[in-house]
Structures are given as structure tokens and as C-alpha cells.
Image 1 (cartoon, rainbow, N blue to C red):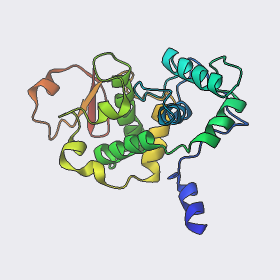
Image 2: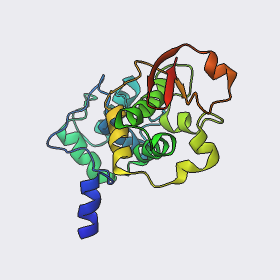
Image 3: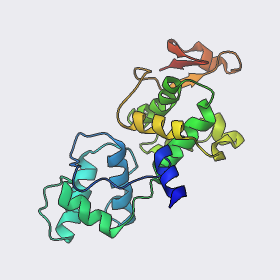
Length: 208
């Protein structure tokens, strides 16, 4: 019990969306939408990429779940729908954990803003149309992130990394739309260095 309380205080556990406090609907982008997508996927209603964005596909999946459960099928995940969903399947938070691990591996020495910025690049790629339309697929796309290639991704993320991941999922983007970043002090890629720099945060130059 003590360990669980400490973990919650550090933000290392993932709570299901509160049935009494949440209403998720089309157009919303948040960590709670990501959890909703994971739960719907576990139940077989959602087979698209995990994005954290409540679009038409998520709405359709929610409607199908509501119909199967005898609920009002409006495609809005209100308290009754979320309560029923939470009783069906636990929100594991695997995708949030993956994003936190990437942030930790890529930017653990950076400021909090710099860590949010790395998370934002992942989300920008998901929504860009130039990269896979799923957070896990963007993270594990071959040759894209040093931390995945060299194993730093496998380190345990900190509470700060989780906080930065949540902030990025909830729409924060200090990079203003960047799709790439690199450390100019150690980068060897001429292609990276040739791209116009949008801004610099800590040791990273962010580009589009």
C-alpha cells in the first residue's frame, strides 16, 4: 500500500479516466483519449493507431461499444460510457509509458521544457501525414531515435518524464510544430544540419 501510494505521488501509475469527471468527445487531444483508445483496442473495437486524438475513428469505436453495451450510442465517452469501459478492462497506459521512456532516453538531461519538446515532436509526427499515424510506430520507426537504437529507451523513466509526456499529449508544443531535432555539438548528419532551425531548447536544435 505504501509503495503504491508513493508511485501515485510520483505519477508513475496510470489511472483510468474518471467516470464522474470526464467527458471525452471528438476534437479532444489528451492522455485520457489515449487511455480510451487502448481500452477500446483491448476490447476489439479500435484497430487504428494510438494517437491521443479523439477523431472520427475513435468516435465510431465508442459508438460501437455503446451499442454493444445498450448505452446511448452518441459516440461521446461520457461518465456512463467510461464507467462501463473501466469495469470491462483496466487502463494499462502502455503507450504513455513508451512516450515517457523515449523522453527519458532522449532528453533526461534537458530542462522540463526540453523534455516536453521531445514528446511534442513525436505527436507532431503522428499528425503530420509524413510519418506513421501511431505513437508507438513513430517511436519505433527504424533509425529515427538514438535512444531506441542504443538501448537507452529501456531505462526506467522518471516522474518528470511522465509529466512531460502527459503535457505533450495534452497539446503542449514548445517547438511550434517541429518534426525533427538534433544536438549540433555531436550530430554528424549533414541532412539534419541542412534543415532550417525553428528554435533551440537546451542542447537540441528543432527543425521542420
